[in-house]
Image (cartoon, rainbow, N blue to C red; front, side, top):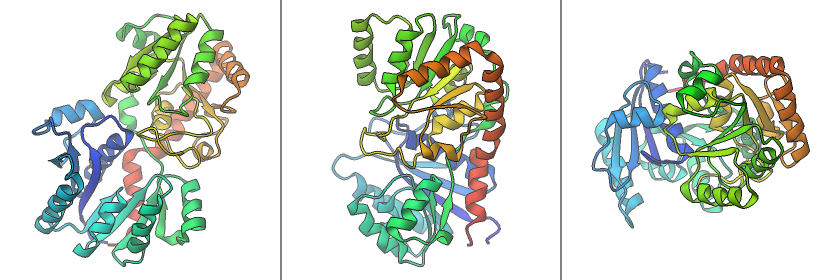
Length: 380
């Protein structure tokens, strides 16, 4: 392997953006640098940004260092044509040893540059993507396929006939150092001006299948508990606030979107963290179904926060979680969720034990370790 390969991380993520993929790619770009790789990250910026200030990205994504970032404007109607032209131009100038991308479109279009390529995938491929994927797989320039879970690896082996030796499984990760000095719930609530009462928190988007109905049911049952929802798009939040008003709930608080750098504080303010994914989970854009092979960013942030976690009992989540670091519930069994929450409320020792174990377990899932594992599997 080359001692210090030059890596180009070519992304179609909008930076800055609200989607989880923009967090993921920025964290990976940072960790490539942390592990000593010369890495340049290319992304798309919204048309209303003429340039990007690194302090904005540090705050928005919780980055601890500046990343080598080049962005090109999002041009309506010409986005991918213009963007591809700029990337090819940059590749010829930068001359990277490796192109890393989550876009099968970019992997396909960059094959003729004769550069080694690693393709990372988080979902089943569409019919249109599958044709491009087959072409990429037949090229000797593709050296590895990185998949987000063991379940997705099984799908790629069974449906796409990809051999195991071409695949690296790498779950999502967390910057664990950002959680190294946790506040106790009471202090965190005081800092955020939240009510001083037992607090249950959900962090993330509010797309279909994220389990907001479960949270509503719990809020009805536990009127003396404060339920905090961090994140979500404004249209979803307003819809849920109207529902709250109709049914007379006063113990749910929708914080709205916060920068990733602020997420640890809100998780520290919780006594219990909820991950109520349903059997069909929509991805960014409220499309598709990722419930069989997802590896949610929030899961690792929850674990790093050292709090009691109640999670939907989906097979893929067992790749990381177990009954020593969380409680599992059938996705739509409201009674089971209610009993699990009661167990944590009544047994702070169990809550603390699960939180401690989760923190210990998540040490294997840092972004830096993710990069280590991927790069150790790559021969350049």
